Length: 202
Image (tube, rainbow, N blue to C red; front, side, top):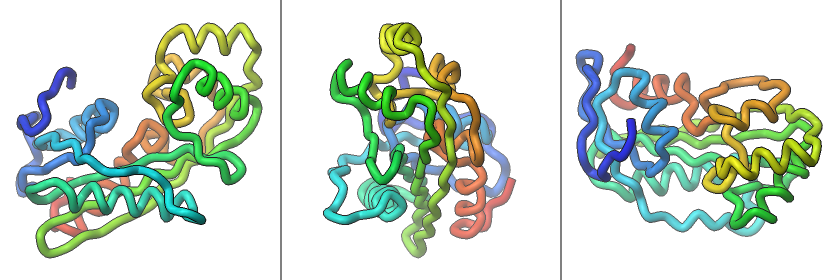
């Protein structure tokens, strides 16, 4: 999908028995992943303060934010998610500028980091959450590769300053766990939570 207007329905022949969904996210990656399941959904980006609380662990943070997002928007059922990149306890969000993106990528170079996504599915009667963690191993990045990747412009709206589904795949040496989680929406967890909350199955 592209150029969706918040609040406008996207239709792609949903499986029978699934109510009209609300996706509480402005992320085009999450919209694309959810559409791959053939679901019908409306996009309703929430307005949520994503500042971590003092002493909050990554898994706690992403579940709290996903839950808050799911409760912020109207309609039901609602799918919400939050993704963070973590390296040795440091949370790597979206870089603020070129220097910040370079710093993040240099930190990730040649090392294994973890991508945590909290997912929440809510109806008026019930809310279920899950956390999915994927280990991602970066190749050792030469300065020329860093310069090339920064010049693509891809790092600047991505947690951890890279996109595994784009040119950033060149930086990744290996993945252990859900690949869709690294993109921003672990589809297996989404399907499981939808089944628990709504009774729907693929």
